[in-house]
Length: 408
Image (cartoon, rainbow, N blue to C red):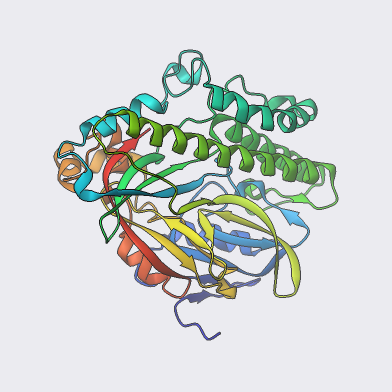
């Protein structure tokens, strides 16, 4: 297909194709991408999504197809992080005028945030895991035990207690309205502390392998594991397990949220899951592109095969989108995972005031305190500009606007 919507950055190695027309593309992110492009096993080119911004080692918003190797930092430490959305039978006019009761019901039902450094009595974890969580863990526990038996350092005492919990940062649960006034529930989270442990551990193990084989890299965080090695196999297995944990985590939270809304006694009886989407955006996948079997890492990107549904959320005061992939081969059938940060959390906290945040989230029932300033809408790129830059990657199916937002 002919495509003029991306820019090509030529390198001494594979090119970089960036769907960044009309959106900021920071110098450090480009420098990171050029360092990745120098690796000998990158297939064809690197695809860059419009929400691109600098990350640790590999850039957020990058899609990298690799032949016979994997870069753990190109997945990151929030393994399996992603989105889930369900459409309900509720309509906008059936919501109460005061939405606070719905927000507090969700906050009471789904552990969120973090206290006590994530240890015992952390408000972001279950003190006593619910029956549904225990059952979900029973299906995951054998896989965890196999990983832990070989790699003791990935152990986490909170592996069960954090299953079905939101976390912190940009993770959220929202009640949204689509263009027709239908009510949706949407949430964003991943594999919690256990995924972080797995990701961090294998990034360090990959660095150790590089030192062991005297491999010098332009960035130590780009350490890789070659296919055929025991560590490669162990990493793939661990990541796939963490992705399953992340998916189950979202499903448990969605169930708890729907139950909480029903129990709040301010809504009429309703059905949920009229339509449902559950997609990762930090993950690894074995795929075939341009006649090669490759390992694709999407770090801050969603798979967008032809006809495949995905979710692209905006910031807590902006629109979000349910999209259908166009199967664009040049992007390795991918699209962005959100709006993408326009600045660091530290800069956002210095730059914006509580009044700025309150104005930016007017009409949304959400926290408006100092602890969420780093998530204020102006800290992110324009979601409209991001969507325009990837018009050849996805079609918009639904446009959602949140009316309730629960932050971690």
